[in-house]
Length: 240
Image (cartoon, rainbow, N blue to C red; front, side, top):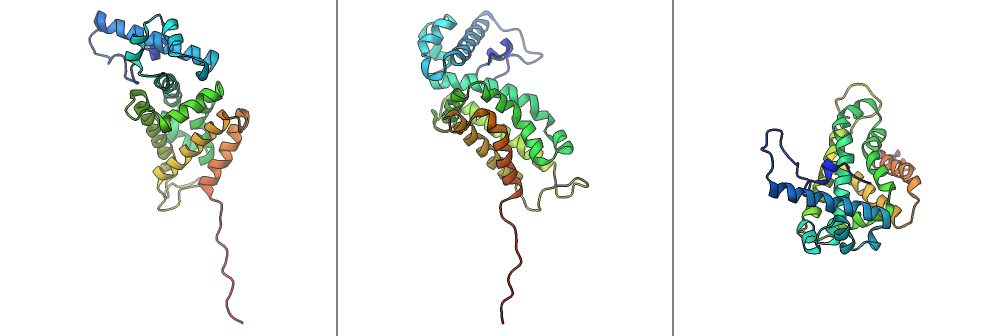
């Protein structure tokens, strides 16, 4: 779960430097160095021991910063977890988001969505328990926490990517074997699909389903959302 060093020095997902930005001063470099060390320490300790067995003091010690300094960068242990997983999910999403429209042109809808989600499933498989804690914090974390706000923005981005992919199967798209029904709200469908992913990750984190079976079960659930579970049947004739 270790992130590249350049991804560990951003605060709440902010880019380090714009291409033409002036070089940061010593104060800013020190802040970024501490942020990077805290992110690295939290990421490594959560991976090594699991979220429940790590304390904020452990992270401060590993990052070689005072506890008070740690809390200037992340206000709580849950925020530290959100910081770590946001970086992981951001990398996974950036690796696939730009391919979504192209995937829709090549693959059936269920396969295209699974291709979009697969990096997230791979990331989650590294530590299902920590992933379940992350999903819980997305739902119930501190409303004003910077990293929870960022996590919700990542959810919005993922849903938008799924909606964009689904829109590629427009009702007027020629060729292919599947396309959206007229009147289908792609954004609503995307929200439903993220809900499936969210609950599936929690289910695996709680030990209700082995992580190795998740791709197949999630594919089946997405297929149900896309194709439905009922069909129209002819009405029986009324009368003698």
